[in-house]
Length: 336
Image (tube, rainbow, N blue to C red; front, side, top):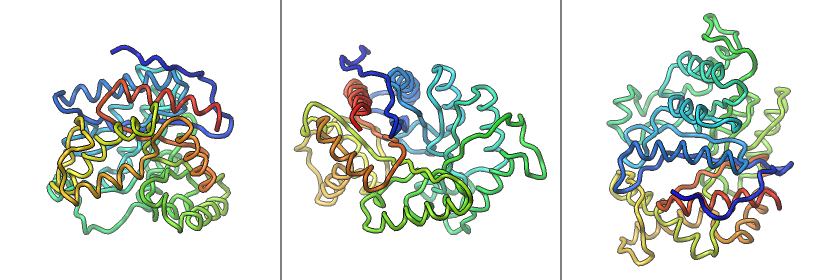
């Protein structure tokens, strides 16, 4: 596939870092393996554009997502890139033993020193059958805080057993949060990755103030990464068209229980009232438009959150349009 025409400077903004999260979205008419290859190619493109990090995700038995093992995919991405940081957005601790996660990421750090990030979350599988396959009961007690502390003890060499290979330096750990995880991140003195509806909540300012106070009390430097979908095109209408495939997939999941592969979606596609409402909400939560429109929205978001970094988790069916959007977004680094 030919590279998009628009290529911007690789000089990073000294104030706000831009990064990408790729969920290895499958596309209609393509095998799952293509989604993984596309992820690696997008990481290479992101590195050329000067993005700070490139993260991958963990989803199990989801038709629309090919990535179920972040450490394996991270190894492939890191092997095909040279400088960009590579991380997980994230490893879901309820699905894993903390020792195993520590070993996997210690190995990645040993192989690719100074480039590995460990983002962890608390989400369970989407459906009952998936949770049962993962040996995880939806009613099980929430042990995320304890699991996080145990994981860090292995990484720091403070646990009763030693995770191998032993780390030669610190490995950055981030907590993924949609709201309540902010307090956990703050009490642990860790950076937080914040996304979802909480970004539009009137309580957002108070939640972030509380996180920063908790993190500061531990002696750590608070750090906020905001994660959301961002699409930049020639016009607002063109960017909205790019947002429709992901919005439709979400609407299909809400009404059928299955999160499907990306496919082209026209504005006049027949939808039920519920599906149309989900699509409208999903598109509304996506920052989309031409460069000036997106810049204004991001300026407002960064002002409201005081975020140190933006992690764009965007997907669309058209890969060339997605690459062009990534390039345009990277160009905004010069103005933010």
